[in-house]
Length: 174
Image (cartoon, rainbow, N blue to C red):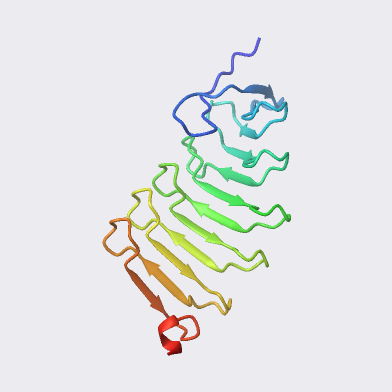
């Protein structure tokens, strides 16, 4: 009988989710969860040393049978705080994220939103309140942010936009 019973909350709702485990033969465990009940795992967690904490995990976010997000626990406290994702499932990473305060919200995300293999967007939650308050875009992918929008007083409304390229600034065209 398997005496390994970690707490696993795949969907982040604060309640333990149903899962199955399998010993890896080296003191660790693989954890499987089928969140949409189609008979295929949508979450595969890895506890490398059997301490009950998930060290890394793969997620099938849209339940299509392809894992599109990989997360890791960099400080080994059981919280997945780094992620890489292939949001369009072309086999290439197009998002990298960090959850600095471990609240379940990726506080910094670097994205490739046109899926050409080059980062073009930065999204940040600078005050760690769970709401994004900076979005920077590099539309021409020259390494400089063309437009930076911020919520400077953190009230939920973006109130400052800075353009570094007049081609991006709609007011510079007139």
